[in-house]
Length: 206
Image (cartoon, rainbow, N blue to C red):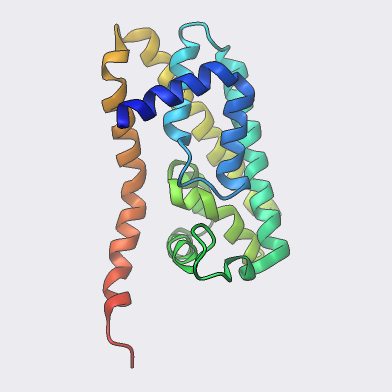
């Protein structure tokens, strides 16, 4: 199944090109779907394909950066306008209190620096811009840190895929382990946050 998912991502990247990549990247935070879309692995594969001439690497990085920034700004605007009531449905798969709490705890621990790393963390990147809007974080502060974090993410993972694709012979052989490693590493901080709050959730309420 994992191999099929990888092959599907490659097929999507080749078929839909810049527009498909941009749409997925935008949807991660603009539509709060960051924890079910293949953002990090998508960027790596796109960078790898750029090393083979499928994309221009500079154009690719620009598309990723612009659409990621636009998605974060939409998420911020939604949170600013609708507030916490967007998470009102307890049975909602996406907008539920559990997803909000995970992001909120990460936000409380790291503050504005969350936006320097949130793009690398699937669940956090889906809701951090929304939560910044809910908490009425100053837009100038949000935009500055989000700009820096998104730029680092857009360039870092895409260019890593590009250079590894150019430098490592037959890198396709290692593509699946690399993607799995990217996914595992990106999920570790979210898993740690979840484990830290588990005893409190399971404790006896007075």
